Length: 278
Image (cartoon, rainbow, N blue to C red; front, side, top):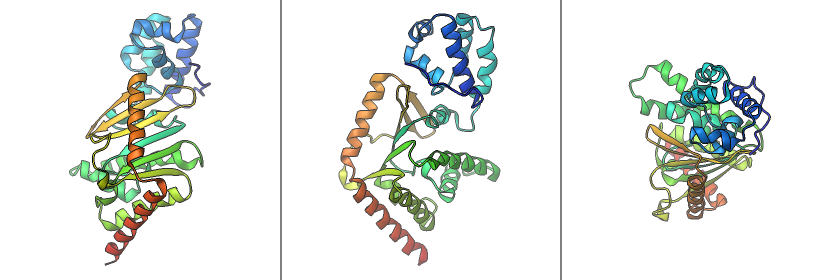
């Protein structure tokens, strides 16, 4: 797998990826050959070089030894590991910023990239009811910053499947919900995102256990991120990722078509607006 030409000034991870590619090629090793003593696949090395995976300190030490880079990767690994996101989500969030397509299943809450400020604040406060206000402010700011990925009119493709509970759970109250869902409806009508809703009447479906995010890249293998309450795991094994893509296909088959989903969302918005105005 060829890595894209990265701007080393873009981020510490981009610098590490670019330097890893140079050092590996200087040593005359393929990605698979470099991955063998680390007990990882050549695809994983390619993801490090492409910047879609974070380099952890244990890999940095081994890479310095194998590639004779005089401690470069260890010295720079700490800076590359810093993130404004929780540890369980940091690597997925950083990969998300490089994806050309994002497919997401949300069973109960609006995905962070689509949240309004009031909705995000209500969610963050629910997760941390005793946190000082500045902590909540920082969490909300970081969450809303992810929406910048949608500033580009076409990339990444964002396709979301919502459980109907996303629409019905009154996060922050009816006024907050009306604003949040109206924002999503606007993005749908502007053809910026695709959204499908799995109605309650659909019954059992392929992802009853938690949320799922699939990340596709121009020149790197796809990743799958599975998240629970305060936990998350990023998968790069091709067989596992393929299984999660099948799960997503099954979810879209269980969901309402996009036009019917939009109609349902806007109907729910009208109900919240009437309730808020009462």
